[in-house]
Length: 92
Image (tube, rainbow, N blue to C red):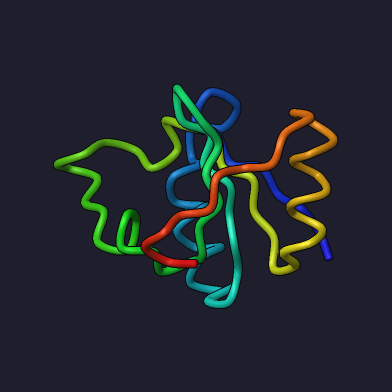
């Protein structure tokens, strides 16, 4: 399995690429790197499932780390940050 990164700062088409990845990986997971914490979500989480770009802006304003393998994703995040992400109580 691969761990993918999506972030507008590195790729102007990151929003579309992340939305496409989610559609192709409905059982996938992602870590959203917010200003205060990193949070683990499942694809389809209510926080992003109904996101409207015209109202809220790019999903990729915050970097996303994505995978279909939860343990691989958590291990990758732990290597990068030295911490475990918070798990979203709405989708996990």
